[in-house]
Length: 133
Image (cartoon, rainbow, N blue to C red; front, side):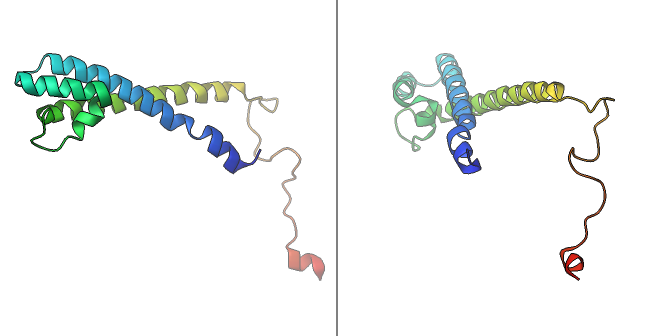
């Protein structure tokens, strides 16, 4: 399998996971924060209805003055917290997978990594022009 095909198929997993974790977390945080807000009832109801259809990202996208736009700051805070949580989850996963990779490598025998790759000598090879003359 070539590198571009690998990246095309598997390279999309990271953004999908980040987006799913971030938006899920943001939705929960927004709903909780909206319930405890002191916004007018009409604004709260409009923001709740818009969030039910499109999540906090939809509320964040409302133009100023639109019904529900008073909850813009709540939506922005919820999205920020959601993406922070998503990046922490990814960092923890990468650290865990990295530690697994560190411990699965086989040492060369004495536990010290070799400076020279197996199958290669440490002698310098002649330059292409010098080998022809």
